[in-house]
Amino acid sequence: MPDIVSKTDNFLKAIEKYAAEQRSRLESEAEEFKEKELNKAEEDGLKEAYVLLQRKMLSINTGIARELSKAQNASRKSIFEKRREIEDEVFERARKRLLEYAETDKYTEKLLESVKKISLKLTADDVVLYVSQRDMKLKNKIISAFGKKCDVQPSNEIMIGGITGISREMGLLADETLDTRLSQQREWFCENSGLKVTD
Image (cartoon, rainbow, N blue to C red; front, side, top):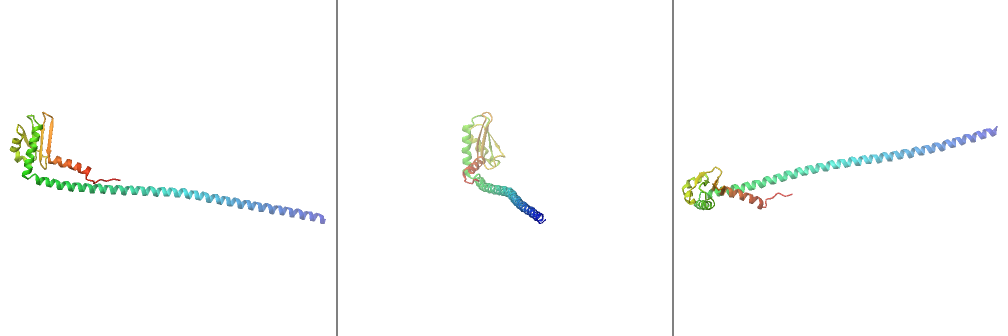
């Protein structure tokens, strides 16, 4: 019997050894699986965090670009407004000086010279000369300087001075007004003053 007990003991020890080896192998595999899953979860978490971070950075960059664009547009608008103020101030001063000039004898001489220039261009018998209401006092001098048949009429469009001649028969208009010259100078000023808004 002792032989059977010994064999049974050996058999039980072999089973215990096998069970211990299996348990150890299963624990090891479970540990590896757990570590692999943790690494995968960590990697997935990092990927998600990276994607989230990229989205957030894109959103921040877009917001900054939008705000920068708004600031640049506001700045540009402010510069345009300042340039317009400067232009308006310069041309208001010029308009006042021209109105003062329109009260002088030199202006009257220049106006009559303009009448003679127009008479060389407009040679038909239907010429109408337009002047400011203020210059209607010079009507007889204007007709005399023109040297032929014409009509002199006041114009509400001529605010500063000068003269405009029209011949419907010839289909021509001759503009010698200070108003038009000032307007043309404004265009020239805008192009050549150096008051430009650039990027």
